Every structure is written in structure tokens, then in C-alpha cells.
Amino acid sequence: MMYTPDAFSGRLAALPELLAAHPFATLITPQTDGEPWISHLVLLADPEQPDCLLGHLARANPHSQALLRGRSVALFHGEHGYVSPAWYAAGGAQVPTWNYRVAHAHGVAEEMEGTALLRQLERQVRRFEGESGWRLPSENAAIQAMPRAIVGFRLRVERWDLKEKLSQNRSAADQDGVVAALERIGGDDGALARAMRAARRD
Image (tube, rainbow, N blue to C red; front, side):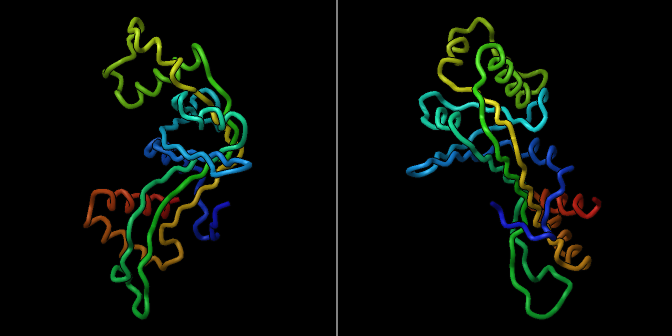
């Protein structure tokens, strides 16, 4: 479970954008005895089935079999960054904090094989290469052997937990101060400022 005060309850409408912008996830599969399996991988939304995520792991990774035997959770980290109390309009005793967006997908994985797995791999390549980039060559021996070296899967998401801690518990003036400071810094902090602005519009 994730602690989520009401003020920081995430907007489900923002979920597709968060997943598309931050597809590198942490996949956790608890074990009945011993430590949980934890892997870091790309997970993409399934365009054919809602509330499903597509990914793959090396077949040599024991996690690839463990995740097919139980429930798992995938963690997506969105924009995040430090917030200085000096940025607030309010005076008095203030403390630093950290703003962030995260999404947790709870579900059960099922294996994908054959043509379905190849389509998944082609979709992932197209997502990161673009329409005019490199493609999986159909006659390449290494590519043909790839499905034997990996386990493709579809994670059927039964529950989403979404948290957006974006200074919603502060006054409008304080939020304006944080956004302005983050925009001055730019880079990743500028992306956090844009997330804050989007949350306020909604």
C-alpha cells in the first residue's frame, strides 16, 4: 500500500501521459519465503487491451518465471525534485520537501510467445526509434533467436495507485513561488514545474 493523503491523490486522467513519458519501471514480485524479486525494465501500455502493460525479461533471470506464478507491482517514477522553503510566499517556520509523481500498477502477469511477442518487441523498437528509425530485421539470426532468450509478458493491471505530491497542500501564492523557482532552474525541475501547472489546471 502507498500512503496518499487526500491532497495528493493522483488524477487518473494524467496516467497515460505519465506512463508514456516515464516508461522505465521497477517490477516487484513478492515471494512467500525469502526476498522479493526486483527488476528494472521498460513497460509500455498495451494499445490493444486497456489496463495492461507489456514488457520482457531475460529468460536467465529467475524473476521471469516467478512473476508468472504470483502477483506483482510495477512502480513508475515521474517528475520529482527538491522544494526549498525559500520559494514560498508565506513567512514563518517552513521546511524543505520533495515534490513528485508516482504510479503503482498491481496485477498478474501472463506470458506472451510467438507472433504476439514479436509484435511486442517491434512496438517497443518503434516507440524509441521513431517511424523512420532502425527496425527488427526479419532474416537476422540473432533476432530470430531473441524470443528464446527472453520471456515476454502482459501485466494485467487490477489496481492503479497514483500519487501526485505537487504542493497542493500549499496556498496558491506558495505554489506560484515553487513553480517560478523550478522554471528558473529548468531541465528536470522545469518538467516538474509543468506537471504542477497541469495539476492546477485540472
